[in-house]
Image (cartoon, rainbow, N blue to C red; front, top):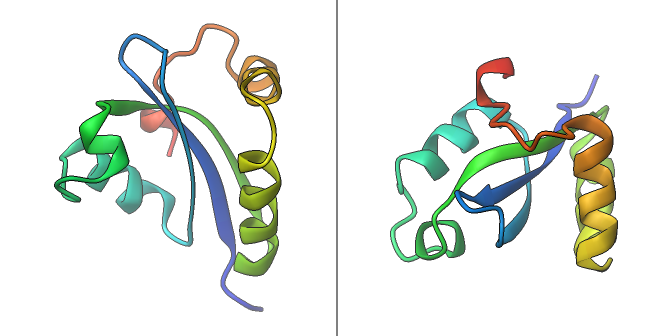
Length: 96
C-alpha cells in the first residue's frame, strides 16, 4: 500500500488566521509548526499553533487534491469543516 497522507488546518491562537497544509506525517509536521521550526513561514509569522482540523487519506495524492480543494474554498467553507469536527476549535494535537 502506498504511504497515506493527511490534510490539516491550523489556526492562530485568536482563531483569526487559517492555514491549510498536507503531509504524510501529521504528528511530526504539527510539532514543527508548534516549535516554529520553519522560521519565517506563514504559520510562524501568523502564530498558527492550534490544530483544529485533520483528515486522513489512503494516498498522499488524494490528500494533495483535497488540500487544493480546501484552499480554493472560502473561509466560510473552511469554518464548516472545522465546526463539523471540532465545534469548540480546541487544539487537537493531543489526538495525533
